[in-house]
Length: 143
Image (cartoon, rainbow, N blue to C red; front, top):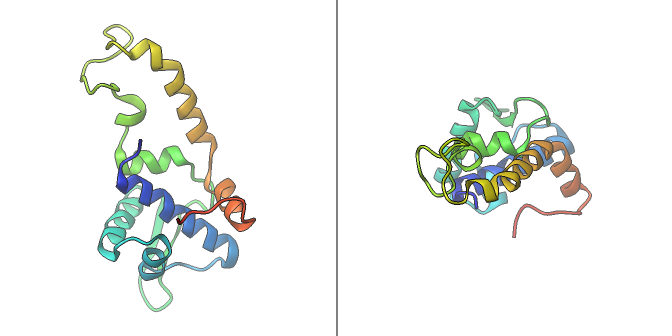
């Protein structure tokens, strides 16, 4: 459903939230890459996008690394939009450019309510909830 970059972005944000909840320290790209089993260069590019979207803060230097910009009040919808844009949640599911209420594609009305529910669930699922589940070992972020 999500792009590979988006899947990794969610894993990155989950790992950072988990680490911040545990120790409140910044996390470096090596630790993130290792924890989510992702190539370092790929991880670094995603981290740059998350910093540009103001979801993460990057600090240079000896005690530098990445941290959440808004503590843990970031939701999955924000992460998805930062990486994949608005197309998944707002665009036409069949890829037509002019799909709308007035000019619907063949699946627009059938999937409209499901899409609205998905948007609400993604907006209501924040990193605090996810980090809590990981910390309590009720969920994991790495296979």
